Amino acid sequence: SSGLKQDGIKLYKDYGVIALPENYSTDPANPTRLIILCQGTGERTGATTNPLNNHGWKYFLAKGYAVMDMNGMATGWGSAMGFPVTDQHYANKYVLQCYKKGYNYVMEKYNLHKEVFVMGISMGGGASTLIVQHNLLPVIAQAAFCPALSLS
Image (tube, rainbow, N blue to C red; front, side, top):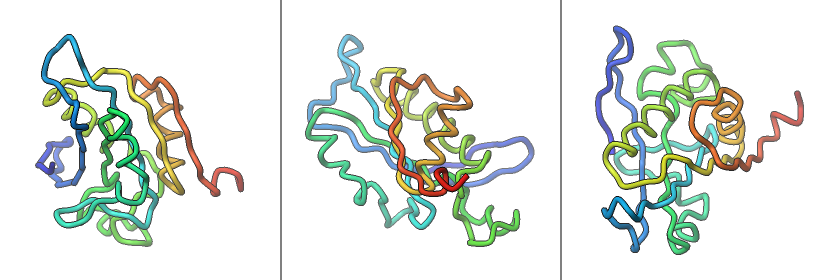
C-alpha cells in the first residue's frame, strides 16, 4: 500500500507492504498477529518490488501471521537530505517515522492485534532495535541480525 502522508510541512511518499494469511478474519473477536520485518539498506519496497521475498515471509503467512514492511526512507527524500546512497535508510531516526506511520495505517485498516513481533536483518536489525529502544510500538518480542551493531 502506498500513500501520501503529511509530515510537518513536508509531503512525501513512501511504500509499504502487508501480506495477510489465508485465515485472516475481519471478526473483531479474532484479530491476526502482525510481524513487522525490517529490511536491510540494499532492499526497497515499491510498486514492483517486495523485500519480504528475502525474509521467509511465506513461512509466517502459513503459520497464520500477517507480515508488514516499510521502506524506512521516503522516495526521493534520502538524496535531498544528503544520504550517501540514495533513499536507503541506514536505521536512523527517520526510519522510525515510516514504521510508526505504517503501523498506524495497518492498525486502522485491518483486524490486527495491537502488540506485534519485530525482526530485522542487516540494517533492518538496527531499525528493529531502534523501534524497541524508543518504545515506538507495543512489541512482544524482537529478533535482529545487524553486523554493524556488533562493531559498535
